[in-house]
Image (cartoon, rainbow, N blue to C red; front, side, top):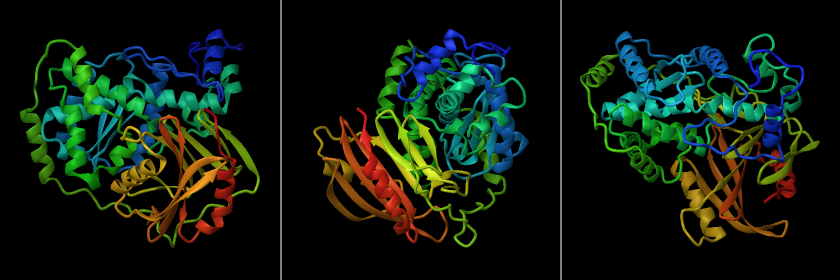
Length: 461
């Protein structure tokens, strides 16, 4: 993969690349100040966005069932390309291909370079064309803000800074193979799709701008998110898993609209949208889901290694088994063994083993640790109806007050129950939440490892 230094590999790192490495390297991570619609730090060129997106799209097409009805595809591509023509930072290199996943789940996602997938369920759930346009404009925002390759760039600098500085990436072969060597896979479970709340906020801003320029009601995007959350709670869990819900989404969208100037239009409906809805209604229903991994065929991960290594994050550090993997996003970190992440019926990823760590900001003002933990547990329960609290107690962790909550729920492995141990600490205005995860029958064998990890944690700011 070629760095920003251009299409020809250089033997010596440039000052720009050295500065980028110093800014993003673990321990000295500095956020890139975002100007209006200015993409964040990126080692990829826009042309390479298209290459990575094309290779990843080929894998997605094999992993997901697509709807290939010509009439519906024609409408979705026509609408998508119209919206993309209003996108800021648009380049002639972007592919702008729109595909339909034949699933009733309400979801949509974008790959780098303009490869956008919209679930059939999202089209059916939209009450008017402006709402569907809002979903597609939001995904177009991820493309032009280059969120996927931004995340990949961060991961590459964390994992192989010397390779980046040496300029050896992208000199030959496919980007897919070179990214795989760095542990960055493509397809449905790709790091390219792990957007943070800040990325979602940026995509909202760009999506609002696109709707405004295209003369649609710019409120429609945020309205769609509200409608599906209330009207289809069980069908939208994956949407909000893939699209972390930014705080104050409606308020922020309203503020963005106020910056855009006098209204250009308030279009919501179209005959083409209504015809597409009628067409979907007479098509055969989506095939039944493939199902989650069955307990009888699922191969459990290897036991945790006794040798622990250190993970140093932005706000905490801890030790973990050296045969586990680390998956980072702006919102948190997942540490898990090989096979600890499983794929669900619609290609979504769920963690069946390991530890998930994130920060949670309580909704209330002057909050106490116990009340905020209960609020978090209730938020988790609302998105997982099988979750129940077994026990909650106070504890001390390295001289700090903490709360321990034992939870049980259905495991993403079919036929199994799951035990989750939630531990919370106060960190400024946030809760630091650690969730130790394993199937019920395996939890006790993982407990010594979980205890070691918990005892090793250090807050870094």
